[in-house]
Length: 192
Image 1 (cartoon, rainbow, N blue to C red):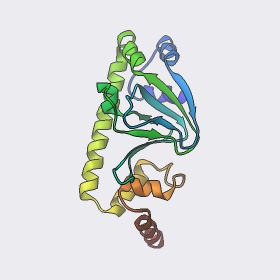
Image 2 (cartoon, helix red, strand yellow):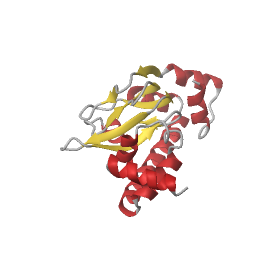
Image 3 (cartoon, rainbow, N blue to C red):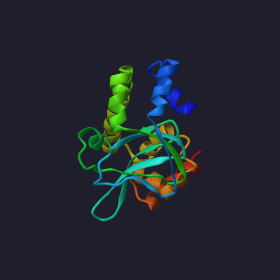
Image 4 (tube, one colour):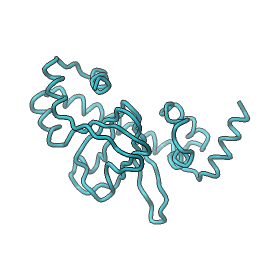
């Protein structure tokens, strides 16, 4: 529970009663390997904070290929932002690659927070702005950077995941086939 309070303290300061009120609104869940938190077509009703493990957000194209948009390691938040804010069916799948422990804040409780502790509007506005900036940068990187440069960006953004994720998931994130990724990674390791 300390991890989520540290995350919030980066942007807003809470009193002891405010921290307690916030914690009361959270739901703790443990996900098994490959368990889905959200499936494409469902409505996203929670903002989720990762305590341990990892979550991945992805889509599946008409040929069955997975395209990973983002990861959420410990200390990160994740949601299908479109679905959460519009309450329309989402386009994102959110899944735990391995055992993952999370805290979830329902949309209803998030609205309650805004009313009871208005500084949380600032906190979630900052999260939303950061998410928008990250997605924009991700699109620009995909359009203008080489696979090696996208891999370097992945390593800088998710250092704790480089050695823990399957190579095929990293390949999906940077937009290359697992075979290409394996050859590229071997070449990069030899060059060091």
